[in-house]
Every structure is written in structure tokens, then in C-alpha cells.
Image (cartoon, rainbow, N blue to C red; front, top):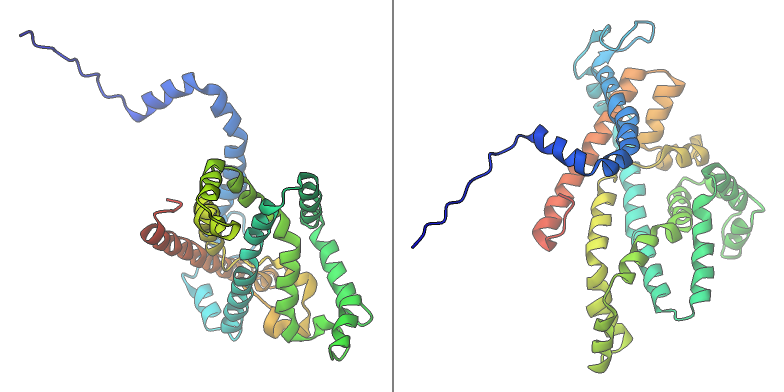
Amino acid sequence: MSKVVTLDRPKQGFWARLKRDFKKNYQLYLLVLPVLLYYIIFCYKPMYGALIAFQDYNPLNPGVLNNEWVGFKNFIDFFQGKYFWRLIKNTVTISLSSIIFGFPIPIIFALLLNEITHKKFVKVIQTMSYMPHFISIVVVCSMIMSFTNSGGFINEIAQFFGYSGKPMLSNSGLFVPIYVISAIWQGMGWDSILYIAALAGINQELYEAAEIDGAGRFQQLLHITLPGIAPTIVIMFILRMGSLMNVGYEKVILLYNPLTYQTADVISSYVYRMGIEKMSYSYSTAVGLFNSAINVLLLIITNWFSKKVSDTSLF
């Protein structure tokens, strides 16, 4: 019998493989280049400035490295500060409330749209639900303040049910509900796009087979629709948990006031006040860095747990 001899190709290094792949797919590399430059310039390069969290930074000293190093002093000052637990509590409360009440709404909305057979009606509803997403946050907050002030139509409705009638944003107990409900209204339609796309990718033959077997609409929802979009739901939940401590400061600082600091002041708004208004650059950077570190930790933990339970994960 003749013996077949195989010749092993010499292993190529990383740069050689990259060069060969670039020659083959250079159009794709050029296509991704603007996105890559954006993240390098505006996301990764500014991370160099995080070093001032460990310094007593003075803007008059040229260069980030030409300032006195103080180690973890800024972090310790924040942990021992009188506002630490209030900020943590308010941030977690607002963010968890947004997840508990806001995260399922786009999913439910997408499922309801999926059950409507009249396509023109679906398009009208979708267009109307997307509109609030494109309204400026300043305009949205102006609308909220107008509607919840004395004489506003939301305030008038609340008075019908026994509310005192004073401006609702001056009541610290109402800030979180107002914030969460307005966020749901603003993002419900836009956030449902991913779930609508996932629903469109489900094999329609599964529904036909289930209908032949006598399954009703609710049974099809439980056994076909929800399992079909479950990976998308899990990925979005992981991403949402990774930004648990990120409560946007823009909306908070436009809506809160000293009367509602007790429930409305969050880490991002505190960083804004300390960094922009009081010019405590090192201290505010340390607070922001701590906030980002907690988010990364939550992302890793949620991703690990999801991988163990559902075999769906980001990495």
C-alpha cells in the first residue's frame, strides 16, 4: 500500500495572518475604521484622565502627571462622607425601580404588537411609540414640570383622588415614580425594536404546527414566542444590570431641587455638582471611577450567573 504523505503548513504569526486578512477584506476594515477611531478618541483616550482620581489635581499645573499623588484619599473621603449612603440608596432605588417596572414593558409592548394582524394599524402605533424617544430631554423635563405643577393636568387628576394640589416635584416621595413613569413613556417604543426584530426571526412553521396540534394563542406565546426571544431578553438584561449605577444626571438635575435631594440626588448628579459647580476635579473623578467599577463588577457577575443558568451570555 502506498503511504500518503501530508505536508504541514508552517504556522503564521498573528501579524502575518492579520496582514493577509486585511488584503482579503480591506473594505470591511475601512468600514469599521470610523467607529474604531471614535471609541479610541472619545472613550479610551480620556481614560488617561482618570489618574487625577489619585491626585490632588490643580488645573494650573500643565499635564496630568505634574500633580501631587494622594493615593486613595479621594475615595476614602467619599466613603466617609455624609452623603455616601444616601447617594447609593437613591441610585439603586431609581435604577432598580426602572428595571422592575420599565424593563418588561417593551417586551410586553412588542408581544402585543406581534398579535395584531392589521399591519397599517401596527405601523401607526409603532410610529407614535417611537416619537417620545426623539424629544429632547430638556423638552421632556419641561413637559413633566408643567404637567405636575399646580394647575397641570396630571396634578388636577391627582387632586381628584385626594392629592393636596401642591407641585408634585416638590414632594420627595413622588420623585421616583415621576422619574420612572416618564422614562417608561419615553423609551418604551424605541426599546421594543430589538424584541420586534427577534419576534420576526422566529420560524412561522412552529406556529402552524402548534395550531394543528390544538395549541391556543396563549400556549403558543408560552412555548414558542417567549423561548424564541429569550436570548435577546437575557442579553438586554445583562447589559441593563451592567449600567445599574448609571442613572442619567441630565434628567435628574433638570427635575430635582433642594426639597427632593433626599430621594432624588444620585451619584451622577453628585459628580456633576462636585466637578462642575465646585470644581473638585479629583474628588468627582474618584466618585465617577468608583461608580464605573461597580458597574463592571455587576456586569461580570450577571454575565457569569446567566451563563451558568441559561447558557446565554455576552462573553
